[in-house]
Every structure is written in structure tokens, then in C-alpha cells.
Length: 337
Image 1 (tube, one colour):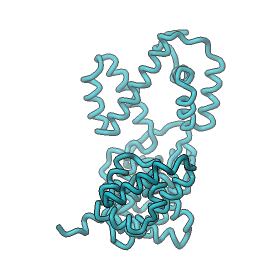
Image 2 (tube, helix red, strand yellow):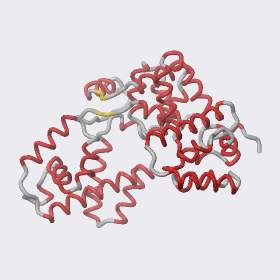
Image 3 (cartoon, one colour):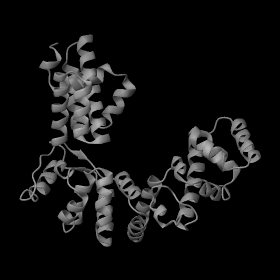
Image 4 (tube, helix red, strand yellow):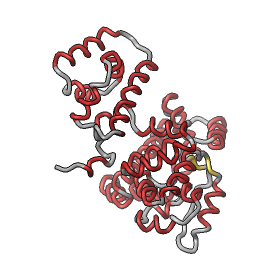
């Protein structure tokens, strides 16, 4: 087996997969499409034994690349390059920077990542909702949300509906959209099918939008597709997000929840969430819930999730009526201190 500098990316991927534990490797494969999995499987089947040194080098390179991408996500690509240059030997840092830079530049609509949201909104707001949906699905949720908020009301609904129902998009379709923008901007795209959009993307966008925009979009969707609205709502606010509710809101929530449901729901809750809820109860009430949890014994995960969903529904209803405020959901700006 040659050294790491002489093998292809596909060979490196094959070595990585056979080196990792099966459970970890299977999680990685879940993010690949059928064609990629077939190519990788074929490579694994035909490859010879890999030395331990080569395995270590491949895993090390993968780790450094993943670290570099996390730096870029946290502080931007300039921040990542600066950090890598300071923390790695010059040649190694240069190599990692080149590899990550290639993947960033090859991402669909990567040329839009650097554009100001306001300018980008002006640029695409008159496009067809399907075109806007395709673009937003490939942007980071925070940027996509800013653009979504700026769209006209009915177009917001049309765009969200299309993103939610979007699955794999043929790269030729992406190329065609980008060609239409070439007289103003240029871009490169990946040659593989891109998994973008979906209900999760919509939920993440709307979580970052202000409350009035979210409400307007959801009401518009409700008339056309109530099932889709429910799917989005369930993803927008999950049980652990109760951490974002202030103490007064927690107390209002507790008034409407049965102790049995609360004890069951807290079985899998984080310690921070348990502490937050218990501190908003009387010492005696908190002790009773703790005892119920202790003596409850093994419970079905589905029962815990059902109890948690009941509580989430209560929180959502109280937010709708303005009785509680969830941090980061736009209600804070309506407060007078």
C-alpha cells in the first residue's frame, strides 16, 4: 500500500471507514447517497491491507480537516486559516487549508455565502419561489432566515413549502440556476447529488426568524397543508428548548401539567433542565416529582416522548397567547423594562 500522498480521496475514505468502529462508520455512511456508497463499497472490496501507519495518517488528516471546517463554521474561513497557521506546522497547515478551501469553493451557491443578506435579498427577491427555495436551502440557516424574513408574505409561504418538500436535487438543475446568475456572479458546484432542504431546514430557518414572520408563514401554510405545519412545529421547539423559557414562564407552564406527565418527561431530560424546573417549584413539590421518578422504574421511550410532547404543546400554546416568552424567538423586543 503506498503512502498517503499517493492515494486518492476515495481510497482515503475507504481506509477511514475500515479503521473506524462499525457503529461510527455506519453513521458516516448515512450521510452519503447511493452512488457514493456503491463507489466506496467497491473500493473497500478491492483494496489490499493498509498498514497501521497509513491508517493513522488517514485518520489524522480526517481529524485535521474536520477541525478546520469547525473553525470555519465558528468564525469564518479567514479565522480558520489564521488559527490553523498558528497551531500546525507550515506545510501541514498549507495542505489542510488547500483541501478545505477546495470543498468550500465547490459547494453549491458558495458565492452567495459572502454576500450581505440585504444585498442578496435584492438580488433574488424577484426570482421564482422554486429558485429562491433552491438557493436558501444551500445557505446557512441564519443567512437564509434573514432573507426569508425580507420576502413578501405570500412568497414566504411558497418558498417555505418548496423547501420543506425538497429532497435530492440533480446537480444539472443547480448548474442551470447558477448559469442564470452568471452575468452578475460566478460559481462552481459539486458533481454529486446534494441533499438540501426538507422540513428540518424550514424549522431551523423559522426558529431564527422573528415571531411575526413565523406566525404569518405558518398561518399561510395552515390553509394549504396542515400536516406540514404540524411537522414544522414539532421540529421548531423540542423539550430541551424549555431551557430558553424564563422562570415566570416555567411557573405558568407547571400550572397546566400533571405531575405524572412531568415525572415521566424528566426521565431523559438533561440535569440543567431538571434543575431549572425544580427551582421553580416548591421544595415539597420538587421532592415529590423526584420520588416519582425514582420509584417509576423502567419506562418505554415512546411514553417519555409522548409526555414531553404534551409539555411542549403546552409551552407552544402559552407562547401563542403571549403568556410566556421563549428567548431568541422575537418576543423580547416587545418587552418594556
